[in-house]
Length: 468
Image (cartoon, rainbow, N blue to C red):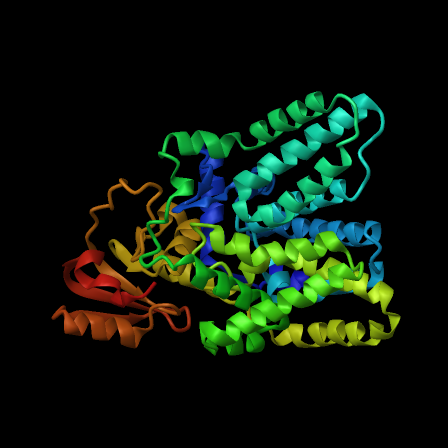
């Protein structure tokens, strides 16, 4: 399943993923970036892994995906180990983490700079937290340094890792209360965490702590209570697939979602009271609140990627329930079998095209002799990553600034690319409404067209009606 979603020739290629590839290219050229462009809450640690793979294998599809695939397997192993040490059923944990939910599996085999790495670091902290601290003083100091470094790196990677790390650190603090020389241990942890978080601190010192401010790309930030409901709604519906999530999205935020969210949290609390893995329950309870507090995450549960940090806790909790209620094992087996059976029909969301289609598109543009091309965000960065300087310069309609005061590039374009995210009918209607004449040429890539404009235009002239 992971091979199909990740390395198969028909595996979808994602615009965000190719931006990660472009960041890796910058690293290899000596220009590292601390965050994903325009998203100062998404650390770029994952792109350093891509840069390492590309240094060995060159800029290939394999190099772009191989570490994400390995990270996905590491996450699976960590979840099984946590379940085992928390009294859960290892077989249930392995089965569910391997194939369910499909959206998580599909996202986990693509490198987005933050999700996989953040989950690995957070689960590593969790794994350390469910073990008793070493009794020997030097070993305990080394253990705390490792715990601090992982926590600091996780903070840089994503503040949402706090849903797992904060409860785990509370457990560690409680375990260390009666240990001798606590001050030295606390200092070792603090210094290590500071070292891990240095990229976050360095970048924010130069951007007036942009990571703590509202994002420039969110035009209408949601009030906290509404974002809490959105986050709770995503946590309730998303793990059960696209259909369930679509139903959840259509429900009004209040009062139905509020009732569902409260019911879900109450059930977790009851389970915890009966001894069903308190730590996993606390993490799940904390998730909607921390997700809603994250000032830069938009709608924290808008897609599967926003439940990445709740998913391990959900698996661990289910595995624990399975160990205490063996009669439920057939139900979990059916869930795993259903996920495997439906995986072949699952379509990964937010994908520009399959790898083959993207390569055909790039080859078409390489021989087009076009000037500057306006394209959707998803197409523009995919073309830049795959084609580089051998293709006409392709600029996204939606330009993401790294800082609020960064100027927009003053580019004039004479071509527009219509495709998956900018349908030909929509682009044609926009140009006709603006009184701009154009000629349409069909490209060899299915569904893609190049529109040659009678005069140069800018994105500001056409507005947001072209597409994302």
